[in-house]
Length: 614
Ligand code: AMP
Image (cartoon, rainbow, N blue to C red; front, top):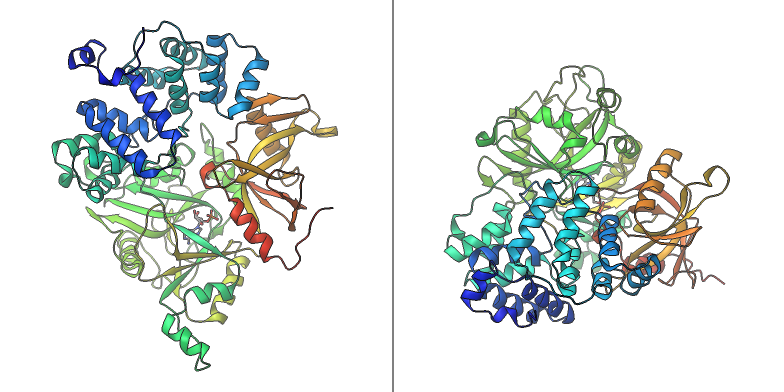
């Protein structure tokens, strides 16, 4: 049956197939990928969404944004690359060689599926069928059950539909469409104000529900719901104390300084330690959902399983709040002193665990170091200047516990939650002091390093909280040594003691067209246990097996330090690292946020000598 032009179906035909055809959605995605023009993408999506019944428009908006489920929905598909690959191999009957070749051509399983599957007689699929299949997949336990469901779904799909089902399931649509563009398109489709729709999504957290509200003209009634993460505000890196200060110098004063009149005055800013833990957003205290606590990573993942002690501690919090801060492994101090942060490697032992044992909780206690307050008692505070948010945060912490008199006194803070056994604070207010001058900043940086923290953060006191933005209102000054956040693209078996494990990693940064470009290869820095765990994960994510070397699905982010960068033809980025060493695994960082080639070029340009590998 030919389904081309299915989006022009009559209402009667639509109801016969159970709603909007999936094929029209897949065709739209194909067309979106084929144009780089943002306006055209938006117009195409708006026309499409506007042509659908509201329920289908709600589904389609979610899928266009690349998500099988809404953000507030705790369900997860949990089908990885290997399962999708298996389903595709079984369905297409392709040999492992043909699978590898198809994958290599595109670097994407969905596109490989399009090449490998044959056009054949299929029953029409609707968006609603996809929603039902996703529901069943999320409910199914174990890879076998999931594989069967996947096969049942893909058997019904045309090659083009399969292409986008697989892309959606693997979380990478490659249509060049971000959720913000879908939001704009939905606003256009339903004649809503884009800013109002965007705000409704931020408050409500469920794009599908907001599309329904837009259609009903009720966007203005959206209220803040807890338990879905707001975007995290990020900081821009600066390389030196001087650069940090220059960024915070008042423009007028700068001119005066240039004329030799005086030292430049500084814009009001606060100075905090940059902690080496895990950034997290904590939601708690909602009276309508008593005892519920949400803890989210920068990756928007739910962290509750890794930190049940924090969840328990905040379950009794009496006020609805969203706190921004850092989870830290903590060395409890005695009686009044709260102790100090332990290195990230300690915290890492708690991450990615299915079950955190009592021993682990005891051995690696954790605290939440709060540095921002985003929501309090029904009021979203993002637009308030940091100065005011900080004041409210200090009051909040003071009202909920015995905070020592001076919040700026240093790491020795009071106690908010005395846990039954440990008797130390679970919520600590991050100390902050007003920025004054170069000497203070230099001393603060040295002090932070001495305390075992990464460096310092400078935050403009007048700045609003900009979710998801890396602007100049927050600056980070960290270790002098340059580091890059990269993703593993290939792995090699080691020698001797490491003969059976993938212990030597090739990694990449983001290139201009989002393609990944290799910049180096490293084997030192991780512990044996970490290497074993990594090796296991990489085996599962193997794309091409060349015996000693494998290419892998780019999903594991590393922070890598090096002595300097050289121009080199060894890797396709045109750069290589001298003496690279892996500092740590960054499971908290999404691949989309690894460093870019532009950052590599910037570091290269800033090096006093610019070596070229001969
Ligand atoms: P990066 O991961 O290098 O992009 O640095 C930004 C990260 O710094 C954030 O995601 C936080 O995890 C971390 N961070 C540590 N201390 C602070 C702080 N005081 N304020 C804001 N972010 C912080």
